[in-house]
Image 1 (cartoon, rainbow over the protein chains, first blue to last red):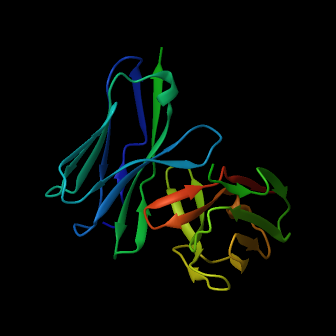
Image 2: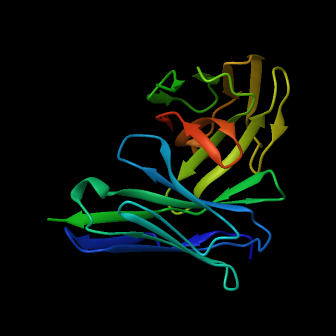
Image 3: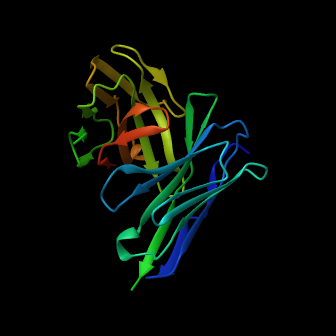
Length: 110
Length: 110
């Protein structure tokens, strides 16, 4: 299909790890992105990964890319209540067009 | 601090009214975008502009038009609002992939 697919909801306990998964569509996508939207705010770019990489780590965030399966994941270690937000996966295709997933709402319970 | 500012956070309009949503960015970006965000559907691109007075249709342009008279300002126009245009509207600027978003304008059409 032509959709970037994500689960809509994820709930974790504070201190646990969160893993948000995404399946994208275009095997020639050069960059894949994770955006975060906090309540009442616009989206902010969280991190991205270039398609020739398998993994990227940035403090508590780990991005894993499986190009064969067109699967992207975002792992948040030691999840905090401040991580509660909607997380959007996005791909760039046709070199210049961008497609977003529906977003995963992460709820962190104390 | 970079900023994308949307003029109205909340609007309530009646069916058939004309609606203007304005967006201003202070980063001297060439590209500006209008998305709508609906639960379960994620972000869908309405229109974008890559230069002053230039505009391109996105995925869902029907019922909308845009205006880019100055580089920093990109306006979304609903000529005759309808109830199915009740949504959150997000403006963004930047290069494909690395976008900066405004806080959003929540429009309710009665």
